[in-house]
Image (tube, rainbow over all chains, first blue to last red; front, side):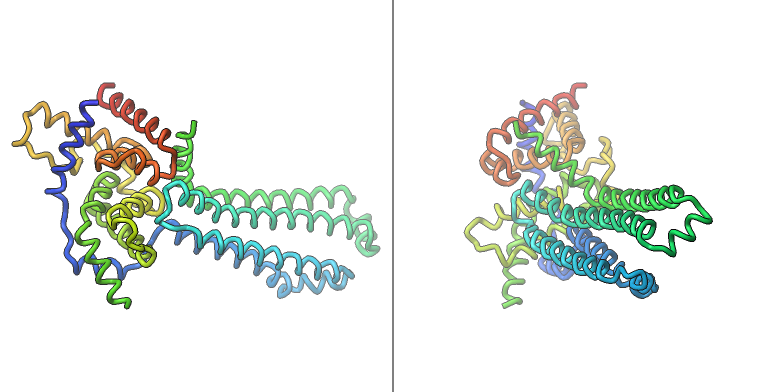
Length: 206
Length: 164
């Protein structure tokens, strides 16, 4: 293509009109902080971990936990707590290892893959939490409906059982839906351009 | 030690800053975005510098980090998201060196390059920098064959932009 050759010739001449920074100006630049996407991903991911990890603490402080204890579900909730912290630690470790792998000196493709992998770790963590929440809500309702007398008595008088089950299911679904939507939004904003470019790069593979 | 490292880095970058400026020219459209991207590339280069062993040329190593920053790491401001029209291209073509027709053609070419997507810009940039397909492939993390295929597609795309 002749035009591109022409451009190549002119390209070399462009060097003469490029800006020129002094030693001091460049030195000033290395003292400043980065505002790269990786930094944002790191901060937001840590916030997400903190938020989900603190749910258990909030649960204890608001007295909900005591309520569960009273309902003789203490062992159940203890297992739940141990499980959720194990999962949290597992994901934080994986997140950290993936994060450490992100290096600007890798090839473009490897760099993109490592960033996407890091972000995906957090995404999986959120999904596991949402599933747990769903299972917990449903199993708690079933437990209360069929295994506790107090609940059965009051329920049968005021509202039919199917109504309770249905409304619990609905509330759970709406809650999960909202979080999923919110999450997609953050995830989308953070990685839209990255994913677009990655796809573009992948398209090369025949 | 740190001072020494700082000094060798800044000296190296000062001597090779043209590479970074050229990447900024391809990816941004106004002086503010240019400076912004230059700043971020400098930080990324500095962060990676302790691992720079000197087994590669400093300039070769720079291409990778600079392009990676422009394509992936840099968070673009809204300004640079807009594609440029002909009037705002910042490549200065020295009119006295060319006749009118060639000058116009060059202007159109630069404007066309600006319309390419991030990956295509990187390919064109490396091509203009006289890099071999092997080097282009290594920088992008794709096979040499794919680099050739993609470059041909970019050429076709440029032709289409120029002759719609």
